[in-house]
Length: 394
Image 1 (tube, helix red, strand yellow):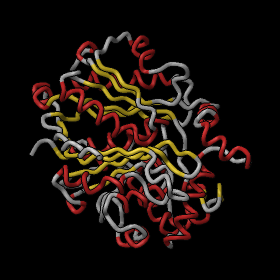
Image 2 (spheres, helix red, strand yellow):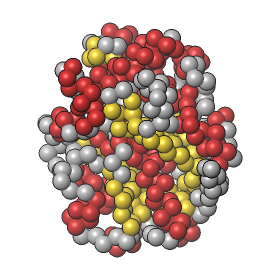
Image 3 (tube, one colour):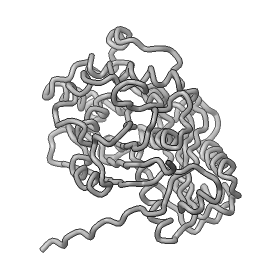
Image 4 (tube, helix red, strand yellow):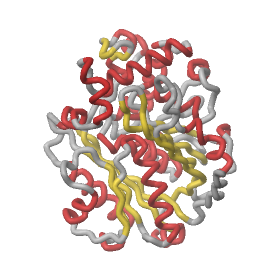
């Protein structure tokens, strides 16, 4: 007989604070170590801490080479009593949040720095793709395909055929995200994008065209996790955690991915938070390709499965319009700094909920939802995660 799962504990008195971004660069000769160190150093300085105050570290990176989080600690001359390495791509930010929050709650660490970063040297992306997954290599290399474009073309084509989405639907999301990105000083895409330009862009892997694809770059993102009383003593604005979920290798029986692990857990997700989708003031999703945005709209309960196209047609998705979405511009207009792409939405949500989002600020934002997706293997992504967050101060 299966045991009944134990009721989940709330994240009482554990908060998130000090969102940091190291400005992205298209290419960099620096190592991933440099980018991660820059992110960690900025978080420590902005919080008014010393390096010795940080006794927990969580790291995500694709380009550390043979180093792991342990090697990085030697590089940084740190001796944390709690350490984790989260190699889950676009789900890494929320997964790191979950691990770090429970560590602080249980007393295994007092202050945890969650950092993600990657370099983008001329061969970085090629090398990452080449060594990404044995399963994926076995599935696609015999057909002369490699990398995420072909995999996401498969997912996109399936969704369009079965649920009636059009390129105009996906294009509306990309155009709205570009509009948001023009307000974000960290975004690498600095020119407006029109729907006509989106539709006329060259084919990459049919039905994916140029503006459906993220641009690899270098950069770092990070934040701190600590007890509420610590944040208040330090005078730091903070964000409360209402609920989180993660799921891996969801729905393996599906012939190709048309839903993610969020669909398995969304009811418990909202119940744990005491919230509904209608309570969410803005949404930050992992957006390496537009079809994944649509899956997250559906699987997180903002519309029913297959109703993503209608949902897109109902909203503007801009910061000042209806259903503010990927308010930084998302990876499709900011850039994809490797594993830091999995932190981008979370860091932006922390800025929204601490009132520090500048020109990208959503008015009166109180509840934000962050969603992550990562580790694409041929016909599906293996990792999904999400967090419901609340503004910490009145």
